[in-house]
Length: 233
Image (tube, rainbow, N blue to C red; front, side):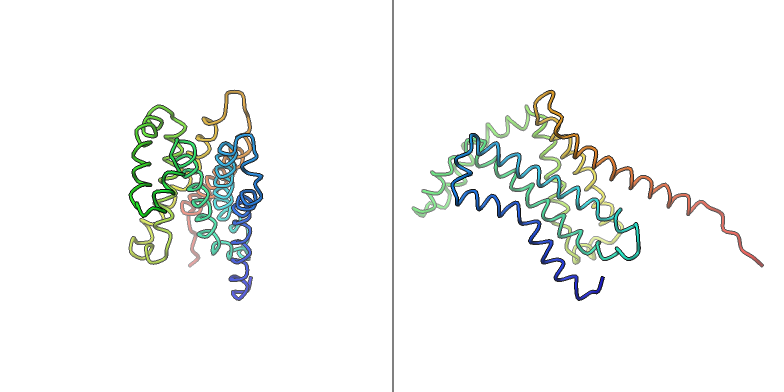
């Protein structure tokens, strides 16, 4: 693909990745979000689903580009797609913090309007004990939080200047943790749904294929390195 086309392609990818968020904004403005039987539940699943699917899309970029040298340009989209996965994962976390935990959003907003800038933090302090209790008791929250922390580390270290500062090997080693984040996110999904619900099988199957592709590539590279080199005199 010509280099001149890459910026336009990035604009297209930005637009596609923002479509789910824009849908939420439109639902909120139209009043259809509030009219749902359980808006918080809808937001929780919607943001979590998109965070996971975009993360899997990000993981798919590397094996797909390896299919042909002509697809090498795909690597230039990987950072952007990964950051959008972190964006939706953060929205997923914020839904829990501000809507599911009992956080008093109206009081926090009223405090800000009155010039009490510490009110949002005061409201957070009020619900923090119950949130921490949830983390300690519910394993699906623990593994989901692990996935988010890993994505946070990858997002913070994604800029090129950080890569240069860390060095290529250390940076690459850290960013392989994206597979751990994806695995933790899938486990979070399984532990979140009720017993007997098989909805997470789709993301599980996609992740399994991506992990298998990486394993096969690794084995192929090992064989190449181990193969004897015959030289003619």
